[in-house]
Amino acid sequence: MRIPRRWSNVAWAVADRVPLLNQLQSRVRKGLLLGAAIGLLSCLVIGGALGGLNRGTGGILIGGISGGIAGLILGTLVGAVLVSRYMTQEGHVTVTIRPDSPGEVHYVPGECINGFVELMPEDTLKIQGGKMYLVCQGVYAYDQLPEDGAGQPEYQQETHQYSTNEVDIIPAGIVRRGILQRYPFSFPIPQDALPTHHGYICAIRWTLDVVVDAPDLPPLDAHREIVVEAAPPALPTNPEGYQSATSSQPCQLLLHLPRAVYAEGEQVSGRLHVIPSEDMQVKEISIVLLRVENTLKGDNHFVYVSGWDAESGLFRGQRRSGGQGTSYIWVESERPVIGPLEIENGKSVTHPFAVDLPTECRPTFTTKEGRVTWKVGVVLARPDQPDIRAFHEIIVHTGAPQMAEILDPEARLTTRDER
Image (tube, rainbow, N blue to C red):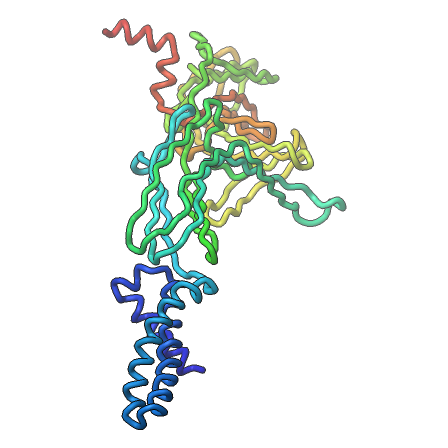
């Protein structure tokens, strides 16, 4: 069995290099070769036998050659037409999604995604068509302790499909080996599209997916993730800025921000104020940037993440009861602003601060299943005393930073004056 199989493999490999044969479907090529081999051998024997009966020894050669040629032609036709129907096709097609936009693909709600799907057949194949999808999917994770309260938290994950747009992009037919096929596509992004968010507990992902159906072959597919930006909300601007205050026995701690909407990569600048009602020893005053991911599933707890490894997905954190569902609090930035110092009663302290927003595609967003919020905070640490904290929520988007200034009436007025 090994010798015939070895020779058949050699025959397939040789046929795969013949210019005309390698353009045929694999099953047609195999049926043709198999029919040719069977027709040649069977008719060679029959022709030789009949020739020998009619003309003796000389007739064997003539009959064999004539029968072999006839069998080769007949077997080739029968094999290509009939035998190939009972064979499975083999081969592969490289499927590629090529949006018109070069590099990393970013879009805004309302924009159209245009481009081409490319098929590069490595073999001639019959395909039954292909579909393309634009999909928006949300992935939410939560954890809860076992009912007996012992052991490690059990992690669960849920997926929600928010948007699916489907089109038939590739018609049924034959794709020829080595000939590039291109099919244009265009998908409109809804005006109310959720923004892409690469979070750990809450994630929103937009993908372009292509699935090509070819008989006898597993689905041929391609996937490409795109980024749908979060546009800045058209909030009314407060000329006086935004302020949060925390009052306690020793002092009043105030946090002042000029605006509440920022783009990723921007710098959040502001001022902190300490108004003491008694003499105070201050160890340090720090500025903190927090990102809070919340899902409505879970046993109502917070996880304060103190460190994580993005590659392995492992993190360290403290679990505490409270809130609704599962909330993970990520410290994006924490650094000292001033301290140590002594503050006398009646003498307030004012100090500017600034913190940079990371560019990780993690904007503010809200759905029925979860939400992500950002907060800027001031933490006043005292020796052997509880910390005093003041926080203000900000809205982070992934659009162009200058768009927030365009929406700011005060910025527009300044521009006019400068001109």
